Length: 483
Image (cartoon, rainbow, N blue to C red):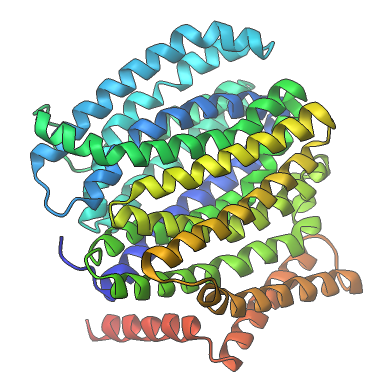
């Protein structure tokens, strides 16, 4: 694998960011329209089904494709072998969900869930194709083509979903939207082949074991709360929990994913040089929090104004949940970047060890909060955030032993962004307290003020990330003028 240059990395991140944000903005607009047409209970049913789809992603999207991206030398037979493995897994998983659907519906006391689960999990079959397509495109840094393809599918599927919701199809509008989006994602340039190699399958499986183990434990930790809330509380509580996660995930997780998409091939290209790997890791860590911290803390600052404006007053209950989710997604890149370092070096077993710890702590908190003290959903989410802090510290400890990236260096890398982000929270809250405006006017004032403060603070502090982004922007502008 050739070393990925800074320019290639920057171009890939920009296109992936464009791809993710366009799809998420469209998805957010569609979600706002659907939230006005569909009751919270429908979102609770969909939230339960997405748990099963996320489980299938462990084997289809989050396992074998990582092995393809990390591999130094690759051929068409590698792609076709992984496709065959993914397709076989997808068929097995689909029929497992199909026949278990009645039992799942009885467990959650929802007759409609049986039919929804059987239909919506068809996306698993589509994903067995898209996983190889996107792995190949990621290796080739072809994020522009992926952005165009996924944007078209998101817009079309969203429009169809809104039409179905308008005519009163309820939860089935959400089902149709997801099916169409996944189906259209398959139409990307790659010729499907069924050539299979036992040698390649063994090699891929050997590396993927750690990746799949990490993804499985991550899945358990992320979805354990949703499953318990759906059973121990109510589908309405689960709907609030799901919607509380919507904005932080749309903004925080997906902004990081834009960086993460180009991160593994970039780090893998430096896997034989620990000094270069540490340098790249610090740069990416600093840049990630510089972008994500102000978004998450800014969202906390404007949440009490934002939610009534975009989702109406009936969704006010999600504000405390959303704020905790914001804190979680703010620190999530620290753990995720560490995982990518371990993957790049072929040491996926370290990720498994961390996830075992994370899952164990989350399970302990779940038992204590739900079954012993019978705490609220808010308290349950807060304990999960505390667990995420512990996991970040453990990940950093292993990074220090592995590539020499110390906790003190991490603090140096993230502290400037943290301070500027806290300043944003105080500023937007102060604007709200002054009572100079209300509703959407106040919201716009808060956003503009926050952006201006962050830019001015970056300039006066001579922030290295701001200077890097600015210099890259000027270079691109100059190149566009010359062309």
